[in-house]
Amino acid sequence: FAGMHTIGDQNKYVHLFDVIDRMEEYNESRIAGSKAFDSKYLATHKMYLYALVLKSLRSYNASKTDEIQLKELLLDIQTLYSKGLYKQASEAIKKAHKISDRYENPVADLELIYWEKKLLNEQSGYGKLDEKEIDAISRTENEIAERIRNTNAYWALAAKMVYAIRQKSSIRTDADHAAFRKIINNPLLKDENRALSTHGKSYYYLIHSVYS
Image 1 (cartoon, one colour):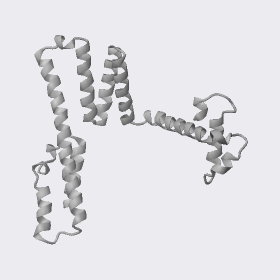
Image 2 (cartoon, helix red, strand yellow; image 1 turned 120 degrees about the vertical axis):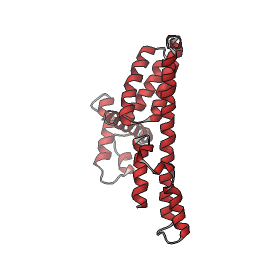
Image 3 (spheres, one colour; image 1 turned 90 degrees about the vertical axis):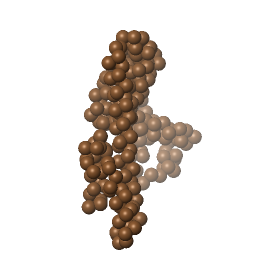
Image 4 (spheres, helix red, strand yellow; image 1 turned 90 degrees about the horizontal axis):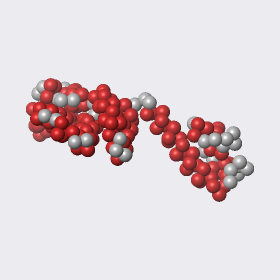
């Protein structure tokens, strides 16, 4: 990888990587004693190599995971907006929405709506929207916020259930039963359809599987 980001057959970073890679057990004294490296700059070389390796891993993962692509698009949107490239920022928002819908990331959805509003403000878009369109944006934002709140409520119930189980290895007394009933009798656990997200449903099933 270092060879992709640096130039020259005698590249010290490529050589340093190869030397370390061939070691069964890391031994810095062997590297420092090598004629290929100036011991005064070895720490700097290692830090730079570390940064290159991390950059490589980010580049590899960016093509593999929706989460990383989404985070990078959000950074792109911020950069494009700050440069006044509103059309390009809008296209990046559309692309990010598609990934967010697939990945189910309501927090990212809220951030995307935030940038959509900023773009509307910069482009005098509010004057082009009718009342129904304004209500639709507001309703969508409120629905996303409610999904976040709902998922968080299921997470809290699941965490409390797991905590109760760890505290009480077995249910023996009436007090033990009461602690679990307080959780399982929560209205959110009466029907899986009350969970508004995939994560929320996962917590719902986790709680019932642990309690049963």
